[in-house]
Image (tube, rainbow, N blue to C red; front, side, top):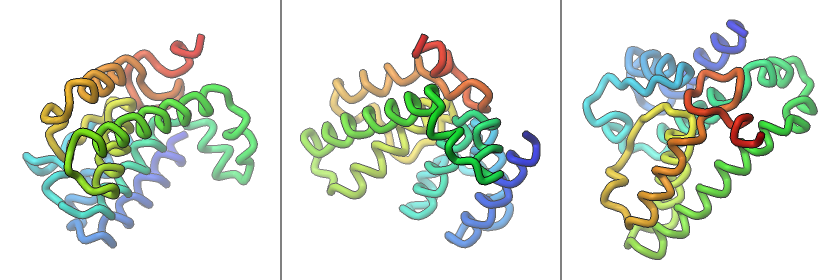
Length: 175
């Protein structure tokens, strides 16, 4: 499990450095992402870097950190079937996908944000909240009240069992 954590931390650090973050900021944000702690070196959190690339990289690794690390181990060992067949992972993925679609659609309807930034904000916040990481890119409290309620609902989910994500955990929601 430690090997999985170290591997993804190093990979995220390299990708963030490639995206223009300093090495110090990259390593700090990688530690905070993989631990789903959400602590940033900047007061504005991830919003400090107005880079879609950085936001997508962090979103991906928050999602990975919310996944059961044993399943990630099997994935890295070349056994992706274990991940795909796992009921909890399927629900985790579907919850993220479903809430992303709802919030993305709501942002398109209730704001003047273009499609790509609306999608990026939706997926970033869904993954950040469901994994209890807590990174931010914009102030979602300025969104429509319906969207804020959807974001609030995500606080009750959490990551997968065996992940660093907090919350109730997806398996308990499924049960």
